[in-house]
Length: 595
Ligand code: ASP
Ligand code: MG
Image (tube, protein in one colour):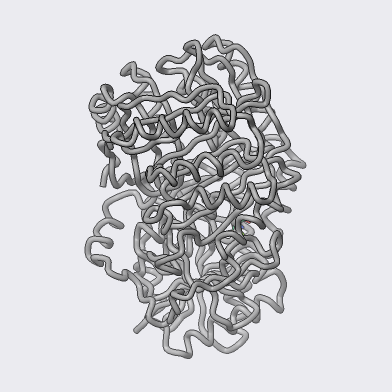
């Protein structure tokens, strides 16, 4: 018999009619011959109301009591849902996280799942019940109630699908699938037939709020195919699976993160440990840093720029001021009027010219790029907030995202069975032995065949990145990592990128020629650099990875020249001579987390 997990979000159970409609869907699935586990969120905005209530009695409510309170939202909806099923003449039993046996660690309000027992759910299902599980909650070893963080019901649903080896995990929500970009921002956004886990992870962390990020980490780790669909219709939605929608398209989606702030620490002594000094203070305050870019120093000093969500700007500034004082940096500049535009796609790793195409689209729209970072699966640029929507549209258009790719996968929902290609026994053993949400690294590796080229004193104006990388491509040079740093100095900026070592001399020659034409101050570089990469699942939600790398490199006296981070990888560039030592100390640090 097949088993399906159906999750209904807050808007899908917002009132009695909606609960009844959702209950009918669950009953229908059961009548079609499936065993059905339903996961529900709190009704409508109930969680917000509860949080508000808490703050009316205490400005800083204790986290344990917060979880006690918030878990009641889901308890209300599971009870009502089960009653609705009964009223419609069918059997259902509601269960809290604790009653199921969803064990978590004790980090209240952001607990991570450790293990889930499936016995009770199985028994109830075999007796013909629809099992109605409370989303977002669990218990710790002392039976304290915990919650998984806002939006955590998605994670409950995918985790239950994983332990039950469900044939399908349906997320019923108020949108009818995953789009190439947020349709509220761009009406020409297109619903995808399917999207890869890695792509969804990146888009989710860029603010595509369709699903809780950790639920995708789970799905990837345990090979759970997810079907995101509308709870108000029966049309097919979007499958989240291992592969992309199109095998040939370099980019599957674009995202605008509107409210960002940039901070630049100027005149940082160019020696090991400085980055760690800055980011440790931010990590201590749980501030997630993004788009970290370091330009290559002049006079033994470097500038380090990064972005944070705008609402974290004040605490960030305070922490950075403290760090700047401690390390002897010369100044701090910031800008709260910036936004980040990104494109994501598994296909970009296999193609050249993807970044160049994005820069050209922005140049044609006369939009100035303030910062750039690229990784294997994502390219992000920082622009002025006023131009950001226009930038998103230009990029979305340039990659032809409104049009369905000719080779788009036509997904047959019924064929997306669980554990596609996975070793089922290995997955089950893993679920019983390990912490389900433990940090899992796939690979730590060193590429020691690269060179870095840096151009400084580049006039900061629209079209520059496009011109530079057009010239580089015309010379047949293969570019890997690109960073453009913010540089307040006389409206100039600097751009660094990595290339194969044997193309270093030709690339410098091309840059000198360009320099005369476009008035750069200087092109230089290093023929011997190595790129150290750590890859795995959930690298950004486990912020400890980047910080841990900075920390061990700092204590080994190794200078970090370039950095980029994504959900899948953290890359740092170091001098080639230090490569092996860097690899060894990072391996040692993360040994326990390697798969
Ligand atoms: N009710 C919780 C929240 O609003 C969990 C969820 O909806 O997924 O965040
Ligand atoms: Mg939700």
